[in-house]
Every structure is written in C-alpha cells, then in structure tokens.
Image (cartoon, rainbow, N blue to C red; front, side, top):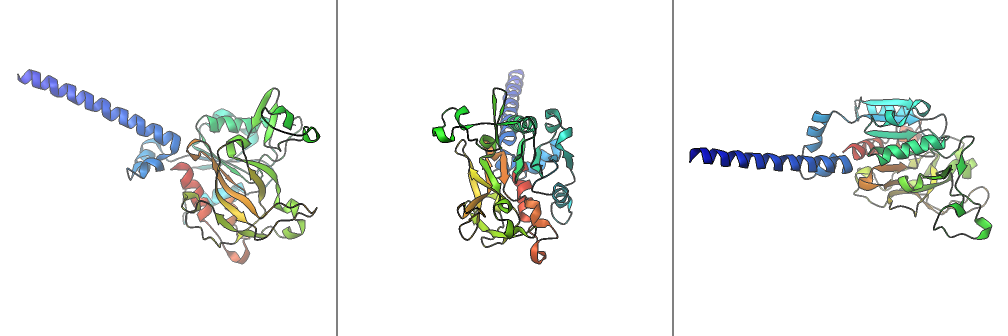
Length: 318
C-alpha cells in the first residue's frame, strides 16, 4: 500500500512538474513576443527575474553619416547614472554590420542614418521580422544610394492611381530590390514626406526651432508617461503620414498650432505624427523627432526632457 502511494505521489509530482514547465514556456513566449512588462503587470517582479536569468537587455544604436539625431548623445543619455544608467549600450556604424550582428541585440535603434542602402534597410526589416525590437528615428532611410530603385505606384498590387501619377513613387521607404518589394512603411507604420526645415527654411535659423506641443492621442501609453500636454517641442522633425498598409497606432502628434504652409505654398495641415507604434506587441516604435535631442545642452532656456528617452527604453525592453 505504501509503495502504491509513493508511486501515486511520484506521478502527481511528475504531472505538476510538466504543468509548471508548460506555464514557464507560455510565460517565456509571451515575454518574447510582447515584452516582460506585459507579464509584470500581473506578476510583479517578472522583468527583474527575467533579466537576472537572461541578462540585461542589450542595445545597439545603429547610425550612418547624415540625418536627424545624435547617436553619441543618445548613448550618453542612456548611460547617465542620474537617469537610466544603462551600460549595455553600443554605438556602431551600419556599414560594418550584418544580420547576424544585429541578432545579438535585444533592441536596435536606427539614428542619424538618412542615407541608407536598400540592402541595409531590408536587413533591418529581417531583424525585426525575426523577433527583434526596433526603434526608427527621424529621417533614417530617407535618401537612397546609387543603384537603389524606388517602387512606382503601378508596381504595387491593389493600389488605385490615375495614368498621370502612375510613375510616381511611394517615397524612400518603399523600394524595389530586383523583383522583391522592400516595404519599410508596412513595418514602422508611416511614410516619409519631408523634413520640417526643408519646408520652412527661414524657421530653422537655429537647430532648435519651436515646432509645437504634444497632442497626446494615447495619454496613458508608457511612451508618453509623464508628458505634459502643453510641453514645448523643439527641433527639426520628419514630416510623415501614417501608412494605410498596416495597423499602426499613433501615440502622440506634434500640434503645430496653425496650418503649416511650406515655402512653396503647399498646405501640410496642423497635426503631424510624433510617436507611432506598429507590429505585433508594438515591437516597432517610430519617433519623428529623435528623443535624445530633448536632452541636448542646446535646448532653449536650458530645458531638458529626459522622459522621452527613458520611456522609449523601458517600453521597448519591458
């Protein structure tokens, strides 16, 4: 009888062990797809345990040679012990990286990389499609390199167009690589139009023109935690439009305060996407103004806003 009881207990322990293992696999899958913060809301301390077991999230700031943003300033802001104090951050030029290099990082931030080849753009799309988390800043990828080809309207299935505009393109974030279509807009949720300072030259006599205030579309979202609705926003920014090719979520707009009329007389409206998320579990975040610019010593009146960078980091890794 005692032997039968011991066998029964052993079976029960075995089944309990299997159940615990399945639960841990489920939790691990949820963390991988949606981030540990999703589980942390229900099981406090999950992120801390996850990081202790698997190590702190590794961050790569990937840059080029031109465009909006300052990758070194962003890295310094991450490392500042008075704020994030994150040491596991590397800054690398994109010319030296392959997909295998990217896959070593939990979070890749693309900054100051206006000129970008289709090859590198496709590499970043593949990184994100493989489960990586991506933050795309400003006008990264807004200029092609020699040999790259933009996709024309008639080449994309299901797009309505007139004969007059059939040869127009979707902009620099939609390209053709041989017979393949590289659609960055479907991954980051927006299409590039121009830079503000290209539209209003006289307004940009200094590097930090006043461009408006935040319009918080999702005021409870972690990306805008602590953001005051009337906060003054400064700096050149990428004018973009939310793509109709994907399910993107606008977290905040730049409220220009009046209608933006470019130097050539074109009306661009008064609200411009500032922070947009896309992808399963919001694995991709786009910022029209690189958030590190708000921590620059050149900010007017010596104002600095660290919350944008802090929120960007924690929302991406949790």
